[in-house]
Length: 332
Image 1 (tube, rainbow, N blue to C red):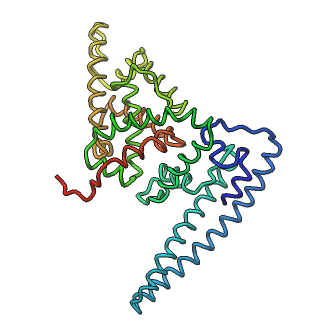
Image 2 (cartoon, rainbow, N blue to C red):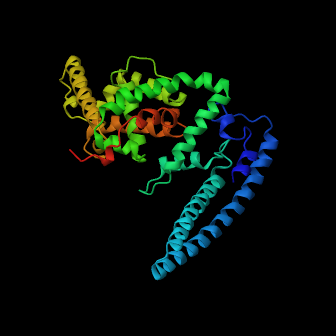
Image 3 (tube, one colour):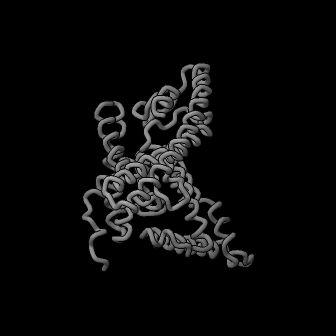
């Protein structure tokens, strides 16, 4: 799988294109590789399905033997086959998805850990696809990759340091222990929470007047800047008017409408700030009216940032690793 996608990609593996702009030098050659890769991916998907079925049978057989004989080797065999089953199952999903998106992206993920992280971000089920060992692999990838590539190191060293400090000071240190445990256990929902809170801070929060940092992707920086401007424009007034009957009073003066607009916006922002204080609050559905509309805008920006986010991939692990093991501590 990795060799096929590396050959198909114009820039090869993630080390060569992840932090750079993807380009195609020879469109005819690339088109030929995409079509060839499509056939290869279909064959790999079929092979992965066969492997998954085989590993399922072997896992069931080994656990059955363990229950009958109660021997440790059969249990170890079961654990071994379950790991192989898990890998082949994900490979099946990965190849099917790549077959679908093959014609729409210049470069595709070659490393399974990258693919698992991305899949976990978009996975609507409670099943976790991103494994604990994937965190170590990705950390090693970034550490080694940046040391080996001076240009990539020069471009991204400062944003990583800035992002890690921002995450530690403005997010990690201000959430409750339950949310910190979610960060430690790498729960998928915590990443959208983290990005939504970060986008809120730079759009409406304490850093709304500061330059938008480079640990956000360019599209995210543009979306934050646009939302900043919209919140001060007449469009914001119209948006708020759609959520309250009080502003429909034609006899109200413009000054009264403006005061009410600011009051409603202030209350909405206070509600969002409270909503992003913890993962529990974030997952609740208590916001109504303009506050909910504004939160959905922030979530939309955060969701788009998830794919290929330097902030999530490179800035969180350091501060999280400094935390004590909170899961073993008694609940307060």
